[in-house]
Image (tube, one colour):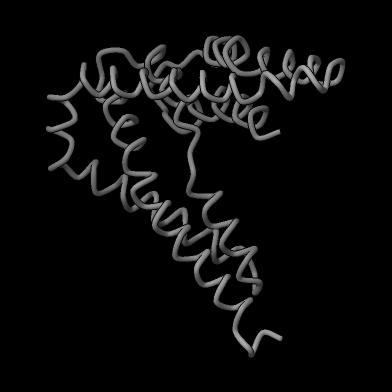
Length: 182
């Protein structure tokens, strides 16, 4: 379901948020349909007709997709290294950190009183679909600082969110194992 929401949001929201910037919603949707939606539908169909076969192929496909994403990130970072270095000292870098931390805090505030729900909602709100963002920026904003910005975001996100998740997970484990929790 999140991929379908990504398809809808990424193709319709940028033209609304970026007045004066020409973005073709259908071109964005088309690229996301081909690279995200069709593979998901095919995978679901395969799993519904052959659960055993899908179970055997799932680990292989997870490794292949992980390696492909890693290759894409390393290549993108290598090709954009000078732009990325320029971005590090800019307000764009600060804005990115504030965006991630702000998204995390907003999600946690919206999560209510249950710490587990707060943690999941905060982390989920802060997490971005980097693969979709790279696809959209490379197809629609060539020659701009958009792709280097997304590549830096792909590094900043886990640097902020993984330690946060570990800390929040540690709190949850401590709450479960403490004598007061019983």
